[in-house]
Image (cartoon, rainbow, N blue to C red):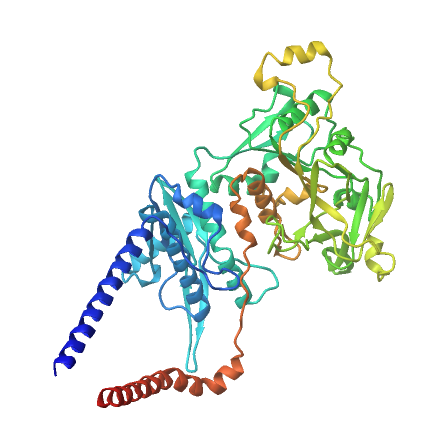
Length: 576
């Protein structure tokens, strides 16, 4: 009896010691976790993790970021997944940003008062959120409702809309939702970055050489201003230099020559760390001339004579005096094929001089991007330059050809079937990213007197080699031009009026600008990839009951068996 009591006391003491040790360990873990924070994401594609630049950005917030998500209510499975992915992402933001991240989910269609609901819908649309019609089908009925797959991000009194749903040409609903889910981190991180920056990035359009008029780039300008960019214009002929606080300059389709003074201003802007987007035509081909000449046009090289070849060559590229054709992917044009009464009859024919440009690399500028529409583009050659890295951003398909100027362009090309053997130049480059240390084209060309004078003013000081910088060269100026309507209003950038199709021109240019101004690497979050693991719908319907029973009954059966086994084990042990 005494031995039994001693054994009980010993067991009790050991149990108490174990409990105290466990509580102590838990307490220590809680204390340590306050100073050493980590999260584990066991998914293969790191679905629930955010990138290092995003973590650093939300950790460094100085004020509260409020996110109001308007995707809520009775949703189908796809939009429910998008909503939950948004919630998980914002939870992750809050895990690193702490109390500086606040969010809530709102259902605009859940407002009972009809007038209040209409006011809310109008307000959201005015603030930049686009609604979507959602059709929910069941076995007995089909229901339609208006939803707002978007959010409003607010910081320090400023707001920015975030559209959660992407629209991609040629993709099904599930693929679009999956792509939208992939882009969530980039969209929210980009919005927060724009709202928290000390000053808006300044984008400047260069003028003085016949560049596109402001109205021809108005859609891009308005979009940039809505994204918290500052958009300005500068006439190079009336300024001494380009200010260094200019983040990016855009040279958009010039039609006249650059004199040496203007070239020097751009060159030194680059040498002082400036970024440039060049949009230059290799030839003077255009559809207006084709119509005037009754369907026949002669392209005679580039009549504009930009006088920029030596600069671009020094930086690492050459825009060729040719016209690119592509028989695989190109936009059509309407051609009059007959007359019915007084009305001309037109048909659409593929116009090989309007290729749709694509890319096959995973650079953050063009990843998951739709085709970009182009109009008489030229080819781009990269020049050997050890200090500069070249990345092809856009190119043609496999069946393309570059015709050297002067060359004959005729509508008659649409009347005959193309010979694939003739279009045998695959993936002709049209847009190239240059990154590295650029050497000035004016190196060893300036007099000692000029150099001495320039040294007296910091902003004008001559620099013969830049620090690490970036520029983008595109051999088609019309990629950035929005087409005009007859009433002097403009179509959205990338909208092709003959097919009523929207191409990714605007997204491409915006990504180019974002990449050039982004020093924190936020754009790299676009490279995130989440695999779409689709279920077999037929198999799900056939085996639904089986899996429901397995998921509901199997855990119960296992718990009962465990209880029976555990009781039997206890009886056997203590009985002995």
